Image (cartoon, rainbow, N blue to C red):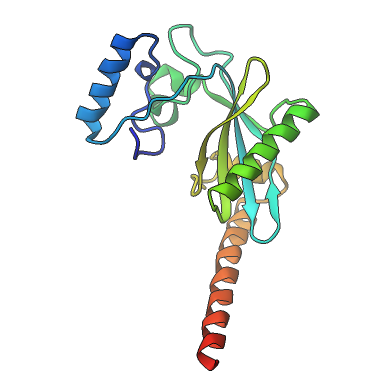
Length: 196
């Protein structure tokens, strides 16, 4: 589904390998979700979550990886809706976060650079999480940019913040501080323009 988030509409059946299954899945999305269907190439490989925070100076936090090594063969290596939200589904227990991700320095650098560029291009502010696929031949692909990722304690963004040395409270305070700083700048500019 084009207008959902939190993996809504992403299921094992979302990955298709022929035209008939593709047509059926598009029809399912149109009927079930009443919105356009996005069709993207599936990239087999490792899934990385790159958290970024900051205002004038951006900071890329330690990269987290979703480990699919125990995913059964009948399930695709994806973070489906069931894997995120359904503790009774087997995929929920087979998408294990690892932070920091075990990456070579060169791959880590490329992933962070790609995430940083995506953050800037999408006009993100204060905090975001960029999801990346690292293909089997070690190419970096940006899957999506989450400008307001889940900041629940223990969730992906906060996992990276914790591994950067921030407590949950410290990370939240920084995010709020960035927004307040921008608000105060806007107020100053409006006040100055009224005086002129």
